Image 1 (spheres, rainbow, N blue to C red):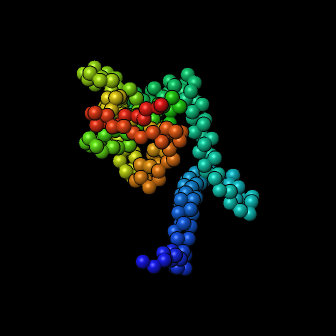
Image 2 (spheres, helix red, strand yellow):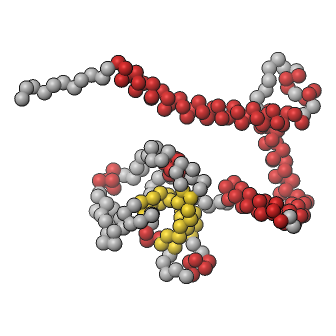
Image 3 (cartoon, rainbow, N blue to C red):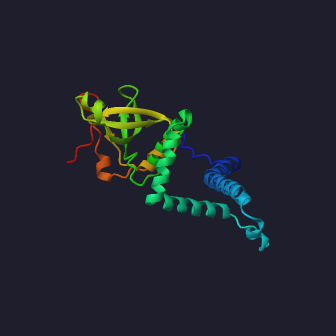
Length: 237
């Protein structure tokens, strides 16, 4: 055999293609985010400013338009509504309105579902998606990424012998839909990644993988499968 051949240098076309793809990966998310923000702000401005007299428009006195005016007005109005609803008089009006809505057959179902969703997502005391876990699904040997929502209570916990946890198993690439699983705590593998990192991984279909935040010493220890086939956490020396 002759001397080893030096590695062939990549051609100019291949390097230009790599640079182009790298530029798309960097600028694509930023550009789309900016475009969506501009579209949403423009839509709100056009909708809200229609109800404002022309003499109060900044464009009447300035040689340029002021973007974001509608957004500011919406935020001020929502803050005032929240302030009004927080006092006694506002709570009384809110209860009266909910009683009226509760008597409407179709509207009450829509209102109740939307109210529950908004309270879960926006309430400061919400504890949804506490941590990221691995669960064997849909069969043994296959692992899926899930999010712990709460401790299972009520009838479901009472009829099961194990300590059961509520786990939301999202679908890819839309994490807002998925399955609710009631999994024994001993069958869950808790991950160190944050909820935000787990959601990014689900949305990207695994293309975006967060870095392992555990220590290097812990990573060096191999994972030992248990007798039941469930992966046990590494054992420290």
